[in-house]
Image 1 (cartoon, rainbow, N blue to C red):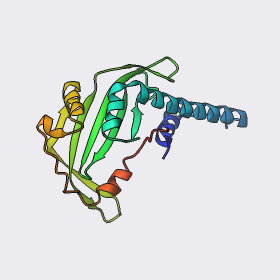
Image 2 (image 1 turned 90 degrees about the vertical axis):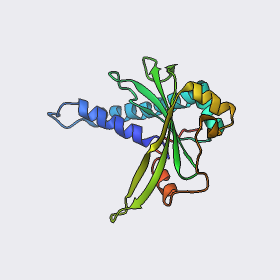
Image 3 (image 1 turned 180 degrees about the vertical axis):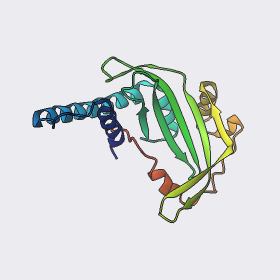
Image 4 (image 1 turned 45 degrees about the vertical axis):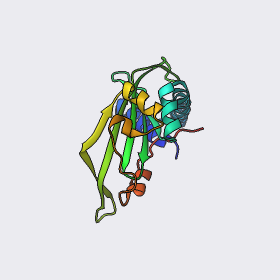
Length: 192
């Protein structure tokens, strides 16, 4: 899967910023817009690849929990904080998330600053298939764990053993339909 979702969101953002046209755009104008969209997609992919390589926390995250599921939130949004987000499934029951507030350079091609990471371990309680085929996911809010860099360092030193944080994972109790659910969560796969 590629970064089609961010490109689609960019297109929606561009369209939302445009006024209702009083004329039909020319072929040249449409080609220029398409070229800008393609460049933006390439910039996004390049910036994402660079950010994943430059962040020591992301490199550690991928070392312990191999995943390509990284993406930017609020890419090219100047009025809100951008984030680098990573997600990985664990034992077909949990989702471990990494969230980093970031800053981009002026042309949005490189991440220049990473804030302290925030982590969240979420447990899926149940997944039901609805009559129309969609999946309804219930999470166990009581078991949700949020932690920061200090706890991450301990978890990393323990090679991903959550018991060092007082968390006992149910490793042998997968949730039915979890793998199908997770495939739909892979929104921005890192290109390598």
